[in-house]
Amino acid sequence: MEYKDYYNILGIERSAQKGDIKRAYRKLARKYHPDVSKEDNAEAKFKEVNEAYEVLKDQEKRDAYDLLGENGQYGQYSSEGFQPPPNWQDNVDFSSGGYTDSNKHDFSSFFADLFGHSHAGASPSSGQTYNSKGDNIRAKVSIDLEDSINNTTRSFTLQMPEMDASGQVTNQQRTLKVKIPKGIKAGQTIRLAKQGSAGIGDAPAGDLLLEIAFNEHQIYKVDGSDIYLNLPVTPWELALGAKIKIPTPTGKVGITIPANSQQGRKLRLKGRGLPSKQAGDFYVVLQVSIPPSTDPKAKMLYEQMQKELDYNPRSYLF
Image 1 (tube, rainbow, N blue to C red):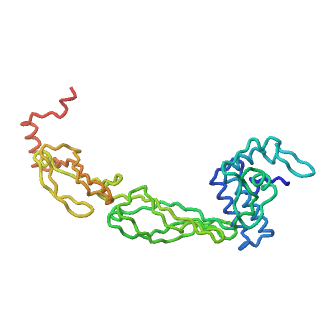
Image 2 (cartoon, one colour):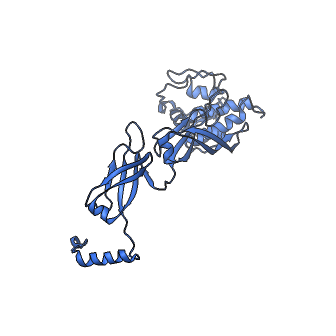
């Protein structure tokens, strides 16, 4: 049999990762697909690409193939062709039992001898299919907090990689209308079926996976399903307590500031965060706001407090 250099066929290094292998395969499979290719010997090259991918995408087959060494250096060459080293089979164990797919065109005798009938439980392949599902594409999009609360539809314009019939990849602009699920959080994903890379042959396209991020909001911060509002309050509201109205994403709500509250205290409104099966909470964080001493009346009151109040906020430090 003739030795096949599967790495060379796909145009990749022997150290290539799974993603590199898949990308190389997809590019070449589209380039040589017999239905669209105008290359000489396209069908033979397509078959060779599929055979290489069938071995290198499967870690067990790849490990076994790598035992032959670079360019089959650990095997033997004679007038009868390439033969694996005598002990090669003893070091190979396919938990899946070898190659049994039923397809359209025969792979080489090299493949069949190594991964077909020479292993228990396996049968020679009748070839590799011309169909391959398209790759999933991931993209990150930003929405407003209100989009998650109100279950709106947004339009996104994305630069997405598209592969032409020759296997060349270019970025194409696409505009999509996407319904935003109510209560979706930052980091979660919206899956748009069959909106990813086109499939090869009759296979379906991959999916488009949109990872959600929130635009910066003018007054709110979001943490998971919880929403935070830094609320300015006066010193007397902290000291004496107060009933005030605050804005929330779904409207105004009345709250009570307990007397003797301190700077940074959190007041929780349960279930008023992002909506979901387990809704988040809305937190009001009290932030003291002091009238400026440039106001003569305010300055007079501060001076009076300084004289009459025996209060040292740093006493615990000494």
